[in-house]
Image (cartoon, rainbow, N blue to C red; front, side):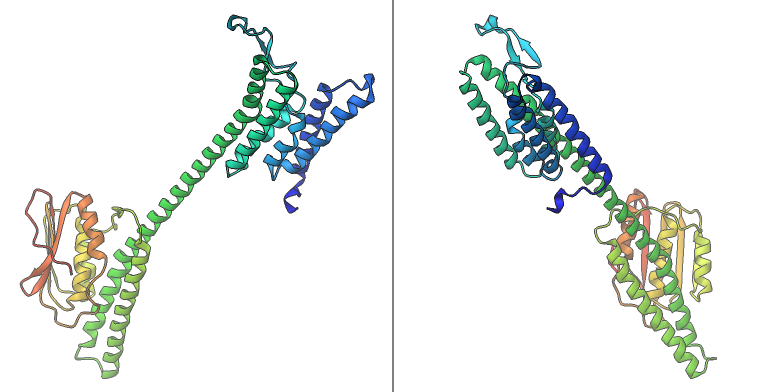
Length: 384
């Protein structure tokens, strides 16, 4: 019975206010107590008690409140919110439409809340059928007639069916908005994961590869003692292992991710080449223009050369319509295993920019080429 407990004072005061309002309506529409206590007790007092029970159970179980309110439903067909004349149809005059007794406000409220809060539809349909049977019995007891059937139909529609459907529509709208909000949050998380993945790959992956190159250069330097050369080799291996772990993390972050965002790194191609040279790489640069995609292509090419062809000379060519990074034969064993996600993400970036990317062997080395669509075709593709 914990569902009957109100969570705070506001809910208690709200329910007490609803009970007071519904009770006033029931008493106001009931028998006059000055004309006899019997009818007043049988109708108004019982109605007030039923309304109180409906308010008590209606917050967690609105459909139960609808059932409790059946005795105070719109079964007095002598009064209605409107009166129509159907004499032109050969029917009696003064047909009452939408009879609304003292319990009508409570019935409408909890019929609406049933549609708003109840997930399953069939219990509500079962109760509606029970209400229809009750109304039909009342009509038959009062002698039947087309006018009474019209009145009863308007009561079922106006006090039960329409409020329930309004609540149901409201619940569907709220659910749709919640799903849209969750979808937007999920897309935002995916975009953020993709951004983090690219930042990690573009920055950390590049820097780790350069660290491995410098460590490899120290390892073979003739001026180092054996212990120092061993430490440099351990540093190279550690950088390679860190690169592998970074690759796995980037793969997890990119899972189910959206298209890669085109975000510039913030430095030019010349600055990128200078930074790679400072790490020990031998690079020649031909720069006659710098398209927006150039930095990312050169960065990926230098990173791959550092990882897969340590010590190899690298030639970088950048024009307005062509970006090429070509490395020669490696002078030391690669610091990482083949395979990865760099070219996959780069290929999507290049495609979105209106370029074409290709990669493959070139002589005794390897070449990565990006060409603007319609310009010089790149080399045949072969994954690295």
